[in-house]
Length: 365
Image 1: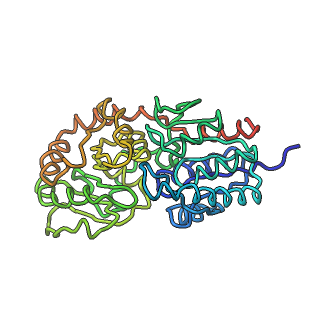
Image 2: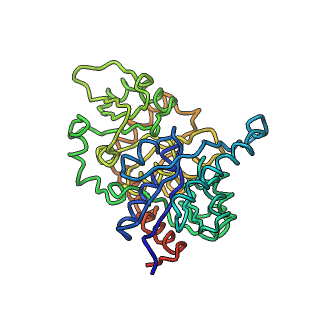
């Protein structure tokens, strides 16, 4: 008789890896209540806070950035990677997982390689439309590969979507709009713009939105601005005008999405999936670094008519002042954008990935 299922989930550094990891952990617990979950991350990423807060055990390994270009960091990588693989192997030897599941990022390659040496089944989940280096390595070591977007170029890949929080995948924005606006000190009636650059904020988005504050206020638009660094979004309050609320962190993104009529944001995989699933019209501003994955992430929603795409360099206060009031003054267009995006992304990727993990572990249900 098999004992309790033991699963190791590897990922971290950013919300892009930590959020789907936590959503998958919750889905595994729903299916197998006595599952033993260990998370593998770093001591400096968001996972160092979010994983323990969610009630899961966190083991850490050294951070191993994988350089995209030749240079001194590339020369140092093999030694760093060996140390990280050794550390990951020590965790596996303590935990004895039945399966290792990786979400990409700094810690996944050490976890994949250490698991391979111990003949532990590996599951790979790729969050972005273009895969990162870590998951390109991992996908060569297993046939259990899942992606968030169709057409992601990885061997053995199955498109299942991106695991997201149940509070968002099941969100009815209209039903909790009043609660959302009250929670953030917003008025009940004005058109509302949500601005977010992700968990750390985004300087370009912060500058463009706060620089257009007076124009947005003159158009009767209230703003909820998740700035990360509030000093980048300082504005002068206008007595009697619509609210412009600046906050460094939003714990209840479900209520923020419900409060908004339009969102101005980056196009990381989590953001694109969450915005599309909630049917929130969007202006996506892809991060202009990396391998172009954020632009590719946004493509399905933009192509369907659920969002606009703006280059980072083109996003200015003048652009926001001109285009955002134009959008928010057109409820029919907003409704069409919402309808176009709402059914694009799978809503239950957390359960589908949990099932794949169980199958890899030989515990199919």
